[in-house]
Structure formats: C-alpha cells, structure tokens
Amino acid sequence: MIYFNKVSKIYNQDSVALTDVNVTISSGEFVSIVGHSGAGKTTFIKMILADEHPTEGTVFFESLDVHKLKNSDLTKLRRRIGAVFQDFRLLPNKTAYENIAFAMEAAGKTDEEIASDVPHVLELVDLSNKMMNFPHQMSGGEKQRLAIARAIINQPELIIADEPTGNLDPVNAFEVIQILKKINDLGTTVILTTHNRMVVDSIGRRVITIEKGKVVRDDKDGKYII
Amino acid sequence: MIELKRIIKAGFVNFARNGLISWAAVLIVTITLSVICSLVFLQAVLHSSLDQIKDKVDVTIYFNTGASEEKILALKSSIEKLPEVAQVSYVSASVALQNFRDRHSDDYPTIAALDEIADNPLGAYLNVKAKEVSQYESIANFLKSDNALVLGSSSIIDKINYHENKLVIDRLNSVINGADKLGFLITLILIILSVIIAFSTIRIAIFTAREEISVMRIVGASNMRIRGPFMIEGAIYGVIATIATMLMFWPAMAWFGRNMSSFLGMNLLSYYKSNFFQIFIIILLSGVLLGMISSSLAVRRYLKK
Image (spheres, rainbow over the protein chains, first blue to last red):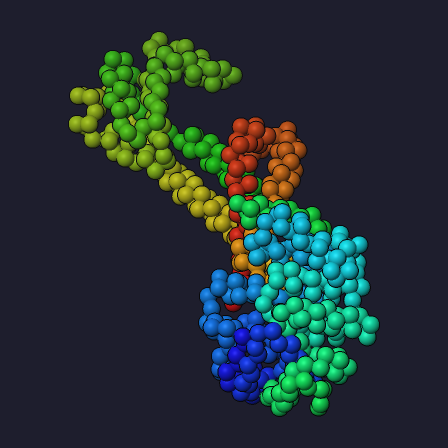
C-alpha cells in the first residue's frame, strides 16, 4: 500500500531528517514507527501526506507517486487518509460536531449523511455529551478522541497517528491505542509513531525503528528496542 | 451549489466567532473606505472650485458706438456656431450704459459728466464663454481672421480683450491643470496607502488562522472550500464597513453643508444626497473587493502544495 523508495530529506547539511529510507507497508497492517525525538518519525509521516517533499527518492500510495500529484488529486488522496496528531490539530473555532462535519463536507458528503453519521461516530468515541463543545472546552483525552473520530469518519484506507498519546496521561493513552487497534481490526491500515515504550509493547505488532533519519530495525511482532 | 451554501454559511459563522479580530478588520476597512469617500468629496470640491474659476474667465468683444445691432447679432450667431464656444451673451449699447450708470450710481461727477454728453458714449459688446479655458486662444484667433467673420464685421469691432487677459488666462489654465493632476495624484497615493494598510490587517487576521488552514488541507478540503469562507468574511468586512462609512459621513456632510458651504463653494450635504447611490456603489465595491481580494491573496500563501 505504501512504498518508500530510497527516500531522503535533507533540510541542510546539519539537519538531515531521513536518509535512504526503503519501507513497504501492506494493506491492513498496524505499524509502529519508533525513535527518539528528532529521529525523523514525523517527517516520515508528513511524506505520506505530501506535507513535506523528499530531497531524493519517491513515496507511493498504491500506484500514486504522492509528490507528483496535482493539487486536486492530492486533495482526493488526503480524503483516503485519516490523520491524528499529538497536538490534536482540531479546528478551534468549530464545535466537536462541526469539526467532524467539516471533514465530511470536504469529502463531499450530503447534509443528511452528516446529520446521521456525526452523532454516531461521536458516540463511538464516547463524546456524545460534548457534541456542541469547542475544543478549548475539552480535556486532552477528549480532544484526541475527537481527532480520531474525525480521522475515521470518511472510512479511510489508512490512519496515520503521529504521537497521538504524547500529550495524554496513561489511562487516556491506553484508551486511544485501544480505539486504534479496533480500527485496525476492522481492516484499516494504521501507522503510529511514538516514543512511548509501553504503548509499543502493548500493541505487539510490526515495529520500525528510526535513528538519526535511518531505518535501523524493522521487526514483525516487534518490541521497543533502542 | 451545496458547496457554495456551505462556504457562505462558514464565512458568516467564522466572522461571528472570530470576535475582536473580525471587528478590528472591519475598523481598518472602514478607515480605508472613509479615506476613499473623503477623496470623492475632495475631488467634488476641487472640481466645483475649478469650474467656478473657469466660469469667471471670458472674452469680451467691444463694438464701435455706431455698430448696427443687426451686424452684431449676425456675428453673435456665427460665433455661437464655433464648436469651442459654450455661450455668447449680447449686451446692447443702451444696456451697457445702464449697467455703467448702476455701477457708478454713487459717483456723482461721473454721472454728471455722462449727463453732459447727449449721445451714448458706450458701444455694445459680446461676452463669449468657451467650453474649456484652453480654447480661448483659438476663439480669439478666429475672431481676428477677417474672413471668418460676417462680411465687413471687422470694421465694427473696437477691441477684443483676450490679448490683454492672455497672461492671466494662460496662468489660470496651467494652475487648473496642475491642481487637477495634483488632486488625482494625491488621491491615488492615499488610496494605495490605505489599501496596503487594510490588506496588511487582513493578512494578520488570516495569519492567526494559518494552523487552521493547514488542518483543513490535511483533512482533504479543496482550495476553494478553504479559501471561500475567508473571502466571504472579507466581503462581510466590506459591507459592514460601507454601512458604517455611509452613516458616519451623513452628519459630517450635514455639518459641512451648514457651516462650510460658502467657503467650499458648494453644499456637500446636497452633493451627498444627490449622489448618494453612486457614492454608495463606489464605496461598497471598493470595500467588498478590498476584503475579498486581500483575503484571497492572504490565504493563497498557506495553500501552497
């Protein structure tokens, strides 16, 4: 599904984010990308979303070279990916309901579909009672659950979660990981970046370890080993 | 269609939720529109003053005392046919004498001297007004050329005062042209300055939303879906600022109309009333376009691939 082919990202000589990365991720996998802060995990994720462009190499989403897509095609590709971030990246001026509705509007869903699906997904992540709250009126865990609800609402083929537990306490972090596992069990590919040992070990799936921009380990049923 | 509806709705909702930032942008656009509106009035005052000055310029053709009225009127109608001429007025010898008497009614020796002379010592004259100040020279030249006039009329002309006034008319002409150009230049500079200030304010307002824009892109929103609500917000700034500007100018123009009409040479309130619709359209279009274009340009920065 995702193919990194000799991908390097060099900001300048002293700042190399990725070096010669070759990774293949198949459909339905749950992959954890681990490494210290600054190892290149986020750059890896941004490459898939075409939020960053590689200095060398190519990134494919199925047969699409994501960095050669036209703007309109890139927009369509992004609708096939759900993204969750450490800093939540919710729309601050929109309520929980509107944040999710916006993602559906972007995907061209009708008002009727929005009215029926949004309450349902909010119920799934246990936020029914926060529907009309703005992000600043919610706790960290609630915000992250809202971000996950937004990421899954359009039934994407891939969920990208960039340090989703970074700002959460262990209980909320555990909850978020359980939701992601459930999503994966239903067939959606999940790519998770983290530097939380407990999180990785509790998942027990494929682990790719990045150090100083290089892939140093790629273990099936891996553990957090740095 | 549904997309357009959502964009418009989002624009209104964002405007309402952005609170202070929205109203700060409205304030700046209002100031910009007030500058533009003031300049519209300034141009009106300038043009009316220049018109009044232009109106004071004329060329007078004085006739000999014995000149027949028939010949003078024939000459008048031939001058009226000239394309440069706006108006020709005839003052007969007897009216000229009466005017002279009226002007000097307090001057006893002059009136007494006039009474001594049995005949009317004053000739008739024609007052010629050109459409443009610059055209007096060609009219004067035309009058000089004998063949252009009614046959034999050159013999009845005593003098034409254009050449005596030439220097003043030329000076006035260059002053009027200069004032016109300077007025336009100042207007242009002030408009550019205020547009830059409004544009910068809107850019700052959108700068605060740059994170939001990046989130919208990640979610897969099209560029129009992201840019559209900001443009609607910009249009709302323009509409509210227009209403505020038009409301503010009403009492201001009423004050000018009451207290400054004789100084300015025109009543600004009646000008405002009679041109209300045109001024409203100019200000509304300026405000809406300023808001929409500034927003669109400011968002474009964050919509790069």
